[in-house]
Image (cartoon, rainbow, N blue to C red; front, top):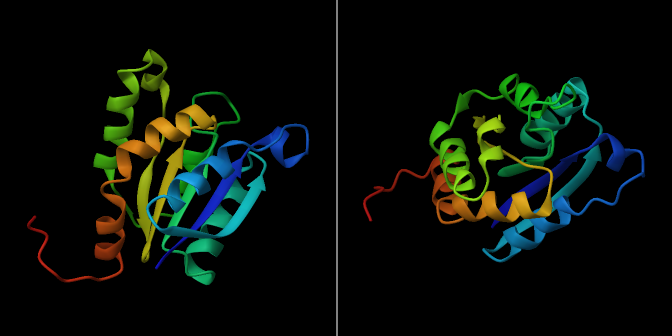
Length: 162
């Protein structure tokens, strides 16, 4: 069983001024491949709060997969990638590059995504955009690789050959 945490990063969402639609969409999609969301949070675009919850989910809640939604662009308050880079041990650039590549086929705005994918300890952390549409499009790119990636991060030593 893969355990996941979903973090929505949104000033308006955390203040109760906007309904979180992206977080529930992440949870719905993960369930389709048998991943159970055991932790959820909606927090403001504050770099220290994002870092703290990423560390908590990875180190203390022992979550296998943490998915953030929101704060991946170039606006002044978009700091999710910066927070993620501050807590991961290693990047997984192929996943972030694949999301941008596929998103670019849909919108040129994909070019301003700063989303990061990386590993902290034995936890995979993925940054997604803050819209339900962006969540669906980007997560669809990664779904086929997620279970295998998480098995490897958790220490599975079986051969990777298909």
